[in-house]
Length: 350
Length: 284
Image (cartoon, rainbow over all chains, first blue to last red; front, top):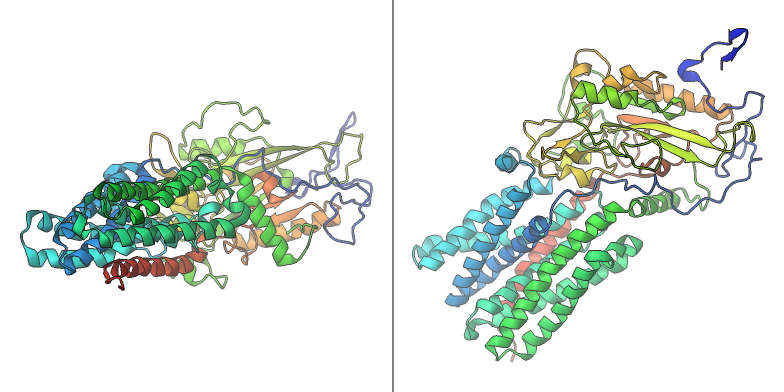
């Protein structure tokens, strides 16, 4: 270090080799307990807080996706995909009204969902750039191609059924939509999980099943609303199976996530999911008890479809909440380091 | 395609892994925060050279840091940290038990870059220098790169809609110049060069600091074996990474994507199975 004195500047500038803060009179001291036993530790160590951050600011940049665009897109994509499965089943088993109505629901839902997706882009006029490349490493790229294939199939199936014409083309489109539909309904789980957002990423083992169940509950629920009494059986069974899968997957996910799962129980996300669970439970009960009543069936279907939407809105908001609080980023990573090094409380300096 | 992920296990050069057969050495930053004086010349130089718009004239009220964090309009960000703790072995009482940590943060230009992996348009690409750059004429503002980044670097620009971040001055580096921030740094806290050289220099630096008793000194992002395969821009820090707003153990999210796709596949089959079961005749 150079010294500026009355006699001028003495010593030379060490430049970028300057040892800022180093003792100028010999032995160095460590003020950290965790490192290097060879160093002297005279400085009392301040007990380290469990969790530190930079002025409480988030580490991650939160998703810029908007509500209701993106959660709405997740819900509608699931509704469309599973409705195409229901439609194909009804088509094959000769339930013509259920088939036609489910195909029209799928067409409308996928159209709205694609519109929501484009609307949420920062540059909507460039939506076609989504089909510039195909990248398996990007669920959004895979999803765009899926939608590009599924959308027209669902639309042709819906239009031919509604017009009651071109039956052979309609059957082919129905089959194609039924094959692609489940992927359209579930790839959105990969979309959310393939991010650094802790509540989403860490939930990747269960979220695809949560979304699968939620999609089936929505399609079955809407089927219960639209189907004539004589043809509502499959929709009822699909809705109840979906609701059961949705409930089990959600419970397992929250249980396994531990503190990272807190956002699913708190704030707006917690409220959405709580109301969603209540609607799921009541919807299932009414769907099973009121199977002979057209009105009860429709009410149950509406409750299950609404609960499916609330699940998507809740999951979406939980992710935003978990990205906004640095503790969900730092604490699991700290834990990971400690598990790896087996360092216990002493925190290594890398 | 995910050429990056194919070579995750080894320490392959990202430019080679991305298909460049003949390319210059991987270039990067070594930001030695121990000699940062918090002047913010890097922030200013970056804005001027790259025409980055204003990030707002607001007072955070938390410190001398009013740009707060990296964003679409802040590609270098100088953190100010005040701690009730002496700077290494300085004599207590001489200048008080207070230390200031200053650190200029930047895009890490990861070896395994999540933003690049998840970009659906191919707007984000790997340059021949191993850096990661957004092509603003391709980006459609889908926003996927933003929550994918484990460091909270890339962000959407308000009123523009597209994603923006540090380019490691691709234009300057392409013609043999150094990035604007490194050029402007008066203390050489920001050092630019071939990554191999920077890593070797950083190892020597941290050793010298430990020998001088500055036990807090540690490197961050230098290790090719870490969760992102090592950063193209790495740091010498004087405290835990989270103190500076950096994640302590970042992992590229696409590392788990094969497992995620498998779950999605099984879940899709579950819907199909539930659909078939719905039409099965109930046993009487």
